Image (cartoon, rainbow, N blue to C red; front, side):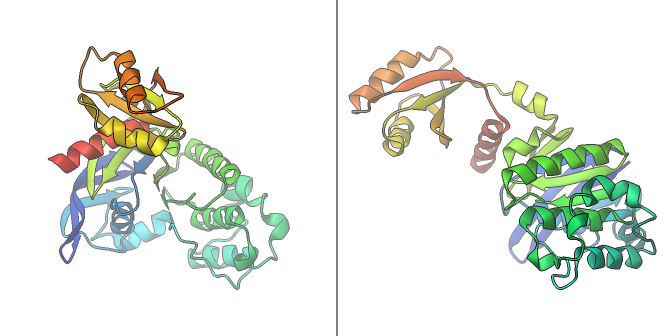
Length: 305
């Protein structure tokens, strides 16, 4: 088993950071922990990488207990925190050599594991880490997390603040690492990245909302979703929230995503209502559900319980 989490809870004074969380990640699986800032992702990562001790529950990483076997876990995992935490005054090569030395290895010994990533930054190996772009810092941090050939890789919001091209490249790198048998647990607030994982856990306010494959999470969504647009998006949101049979309303790019309580909902009735509210260029048409739609529905239900 790559990772096993059973009924983990952790509080900071009166704040419950994670509450009764349980899930398993199979060996060689790319598993995503999906949720907004403050959902409890980083707290859980710190527990699993032995930087925090949970108040309740048990967890194992690479079959090692996170409390009893913390030394073995630290040798067996790679951890890339959300904030760039390498030595800014050291060069790319010096940072990588330093981390290799800590784990009793060399760059050459595990070069095959980092080669695809390192070749992209190797031409700048003498540049100080503090002078690198966001995408290059990301690649260097990943190389440092991999240099000792870990069994499990923890990536805490690795693409936050990184440009779209670098984000795409990063996920392509993760797919190649997965093919080499490394178990990967990645957290992200980006719902579009969730679709790139084998399985995902949606998390909000320290609680797991659902665990499934991205495809099944979307397929199991029970509501019909409509894209609604008009010339005035702000007032459109307000007026849709006042519609008598409204179930949910939230902004989604250039549209508003709308669901209705009625199974026999008639879009033309909604168009008429909006025109009476002085909206123009009104559009209402059926669209496909996304992981973000499912998350919004589950998060809303969780708050009302």
